[in-house]
Length: 318
Image 1 (cartoon, rainbow, N blue to C red):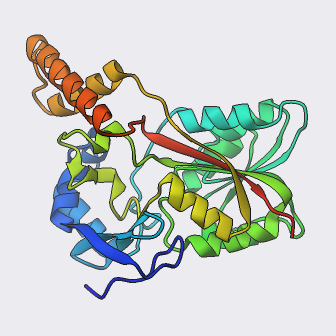
Image 2 (image 1 turned 180 degrees about the horizontal axis):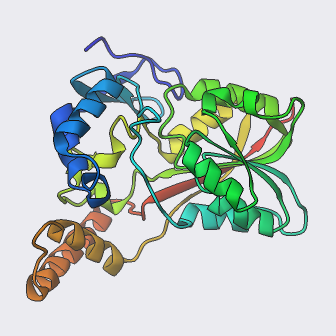
């Protein structure tokens, strides 16, 4: 590995390695997921991860100035290898719908719209919504529901929008942690976001309970999905503020997803009991009780949250 590079969020040279993992370890974790294992085996996953990373090992570095953690190599899934995902509207998307003004329709851009669930709800609220996604199948699904969805990578943002298009709101959910060049995307955003535009960013929270309590889906200090080629960046409130201010956005709010102690404990216990032979009922109850104690202890050591972090910012006037 090369010497520690500068921070992609704030540019500070004060970075240090905090953990590393090999391709085999990451492939093993992905192969435990039923929706992935059904179509790809561990050996195939290892080949795909190695091909997309261009390396046998990946490390995470932390910035001493803003706290962001970033991967080296900074490479993500190719479109062909990206694992299929299917989710309903998450907390950050529902919270964003509450933040959009109900009385004033906006020209809205969603980056990473997937099959268009958020776009559909925003359009139902009266907003003129356009979505961008790099997966052709998701774009087709969104268009089939009558939505304005465009196919293209974030690197081609301006290429798929009409010349002179300006948006009063921009949303991205579970996107900013995938980027390999966040400066490039936010440079493009500066050309399409109107002065005073609202920006809503949702990403994994570094305070989430799944990073603080051991379970089988962790690799090192984090959840397996928080490693490349899935995630290249691990943002926190401080690092997102730093990055957005540098790109001309004034942060108005930052919120971490709430969670319930019982719900978090049940989730952790479920992860521990997942597999070809799930725990019997008595063992499951004992695991839930043990997880309840561990989550409560983690909460006593510092702030704890649900899975997601939401940051809303306003575009400064030029």
